Image (cartoon, rainbow, N blue to C red; front, side, top):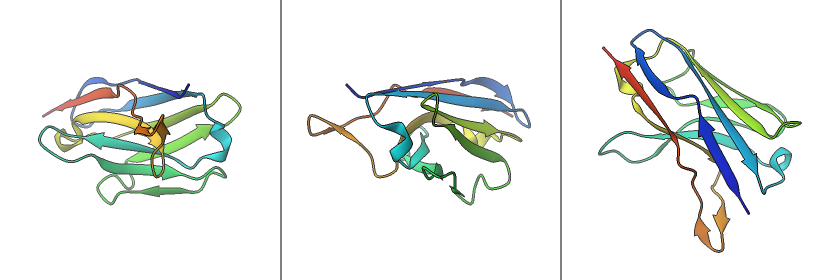
Length: 119
């Protein structure tokens, strides 16, 4: 059974930092390129950062230089360090394999973790 459990969100003032974690199970984690996505109220889900199985990274322009994605294949964990947070970073953050994953034919998403940045 696929399971992705995100944690580490919270309420922070603008300029602050948070570190998100994602615990993966039910997949061969080391074989997947993984990503963090976010969805703000009234907006579509967007890709924020991605990391290949080998550790190459890519970021949305809006977070370059502020966010850093990393992974630990020995622990099946995905992380994202978020610095210099802005109010526009407020969203629910999800981890997922790049391109998504399905469980019994249905796209699977974890519950996400809420990040709220106050101005």
